[in-house]
Length: 129
Image (cartoon, rainbow, N blue to C red; front, side):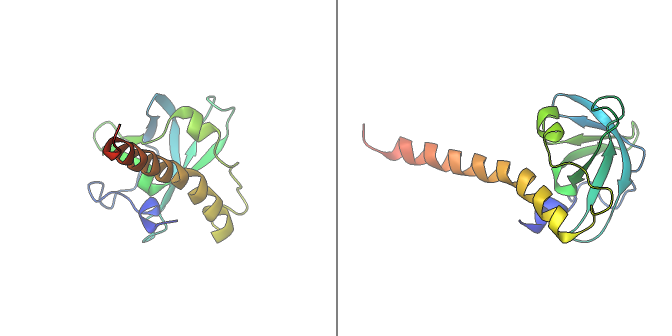
């Protein structure tokens, strides 16, 4: 698991995102309930409200695509289904290394899969027909 997954994009800077609305790629998922600024270990906890029956989810800071400070809105680089199917939020252990590893493995796997798929497409194109 790379630390980039747990690091805010440079364009966001040091901003408390608590209370900001959260948008997935395909719609609203809730509000930021908690946000950390720990170097290489940053995340947001999102209260999904009625969307997933009051469930909370932990999202690594590296999934944040952009933030609108005026509208107080955060955009996440994942779909609602990906977020809903993430490992269950564990309110007692969400700050532990083991829990964060399972979250990192879940969200980090998509980037790896996409990279491998693109590398395969490039390799396939270079093969003689």
